[in-house]
Length: 154
Image (cartoon, rainbow, N blue to C red; front, side, top):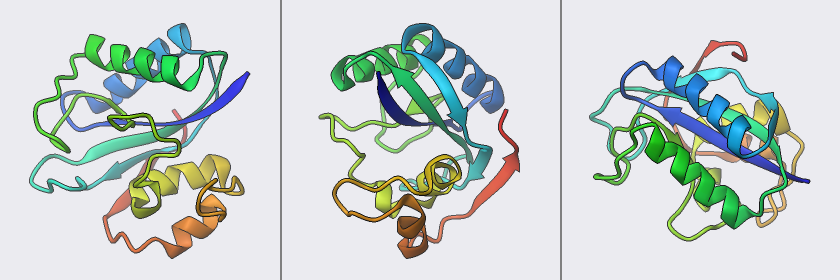
């Protein structure tokens, strides 16, 4: 069994509904969600003139390889209406990934909206490249984006 840490989020439509629907599909198709962070509302990162996002980290136990997991997650995004037109633009759902699979996400250490919920469920996990805990990466992060907890785990 593999452990995967997924950041899910979206800023269009009924954001809570999309998060819940994504979690159901992830459990049906990918494995068991064993932990989830609180839900956080965050200002948009990159292209800032768009609605705020809801974000949440999921801890997933899966038998899928990273490549098959990524393909399955992209299929879930598509089923939920995700259309990739503008990089960093508005979206119904986003299950963080890169064009070519890179683990962990190369920009993780620069994004409080990812580090804050990840710290909630995996503070002591070491980043395999930076060799620092998620907690330390969060302390070191220079991102000033507003990230607010809006609900306990849902």
